[in-house]
Length: 228
Image 1 (tube, rainbow, N blue to C red):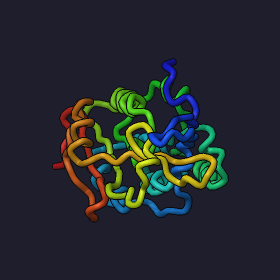
Image 2 (image 1 turned 90 degrees about the vertical axis):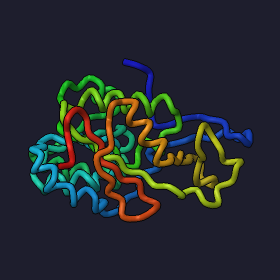
Image 3 (image 1 turned 90 degrees about the horizontal axis):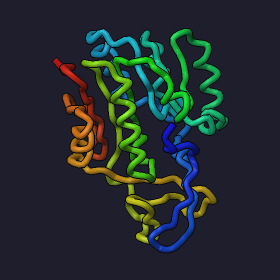
């Protein structure tokens, strides 16, 4: 197994010379409702005969639950350390009662699993990863696990770093919550950067689902899948 994202903790040095520990599981925001784009997509996905969905970086499962309720089979991928967080652990126990729910621990179980999926969710994940090569590795594996004529729903936000000091620069982004022992990481991507990145893995944009200027919510397609 390649040595990628084996643990959610990174010891990095900021541009200001400070040693910082990034904990990517600290990016999970408990208690948030599911994004409207997920619930709005359920009818479309059923029309396209989507059955099996991979929720990568599922966190507290806020997007998993509406998909389960709509009748999809959902596999949630996360770090073991993230699933152990109190909010995530509570959500996990609730989801396990559903017959269409399964999990994969990242990275070992995720890489070894041989299932193929009709769609995948990548919601607020890539921008929280501090190592650029690992973002590419994640997308490479997601592409392999998607069937032909399948979909990937991507979510991110822009203009979230207002007031962030240049001394908080680390890797190609910024660390947040400087007063904490462990920090979260954020790397903003322009719309052009996002589409170019996805195109590298032969994922083409078929629909923008954002309702606000700061949201970046795109449906990408693999193979011959379409919006129509």
